[in-house]
Image 1 (cartoon, rainbow, N blue to C red):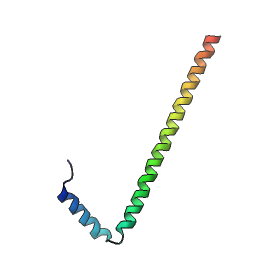
Image 2: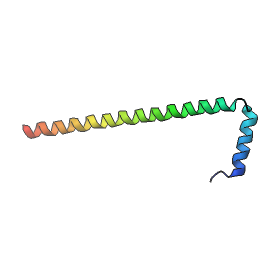
Image 3: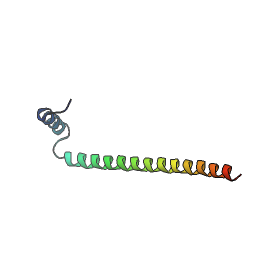
Image 4: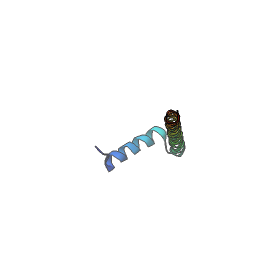
Length: 70
């Protein structure tokens, strides 16, 4: 189910009617900022998960080393 040219033009016309031609650049700018913020939030979340996984792995390796040395 993909959008064709006709459907895209109809959606664009509805958006222009709702927001007007003057508001569209502002709307695009705010949408771009929202997408950028969302992507940076995802990257931060992934980094936190990687750091947590790394710490857990290091802790389990340290425990294995401690039991071998005992």
